[in-house]
Image 1 (cartoon, helix red, strand yellow):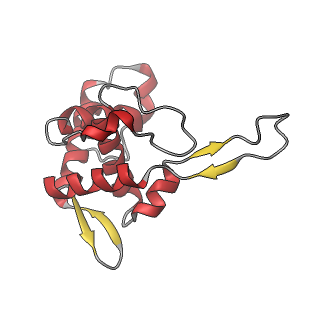
Image 2 (cartoon, rainbow, N blue to C red):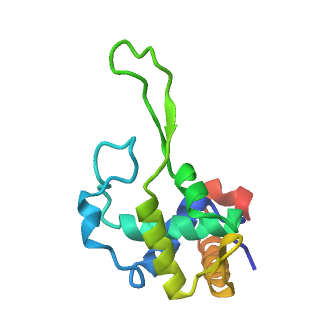
Length: 152
């Protein structure tokens, strides 16, 4: 059986997002909210909420236990320097902690993530099983594709 480390991350996230789309409720404020201070516009993907939830689930599984602050740094972006002549160097800007916290709470309610008071968020057995089963299915379905030979 394959694990989440054996499948390509982008395809695993897409497959898990398709399974999580029914369980995660997109909030009303999402269409007006930026995902970080370095961004100019709100997300434009139709399934952004499910994709970010799947990405967070995978990130917590790989890096966990992890907190909201470390996750917001991981989902942050580099803000360019001053607009005139670009003389100031780029600076790291964190991602939106509200988006991350709300998604983590929804994943916790669904039973995929557990909150440890002293250490941070950890993946439960159910969340690990979802990731591993999806990775196994991806590897079995796409084994004949030449770009995925290294994952076999």
